[in-house]
Length: 118
Image (tube, rainbow, N blue to C red):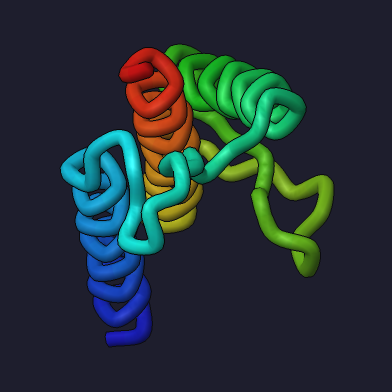
């Protein structure tokens, strides 16, 4: 039951982020107060988020190819989940990594689209 609640909350948060990004993209060149619309990330944040997204994406691909993933949380540092032995924990961590990569990629996409408008 707790796992189902976790997945539902992750999907709800993803939907909220998607709606926020769509609102920013539909806003136009100026916001409500008449100032130029600002993207969610600045130049340094864009580069940092791109680096983190690439790192997490590489970890996700490695986990899918090897069938094992290190635990993402603090409480289980150093523990390795394999698809054959701990399928639930493996897919939970893979889902979390995939969600983080998708979230960062969408933030980068929205930022780039706002920058390329003007």
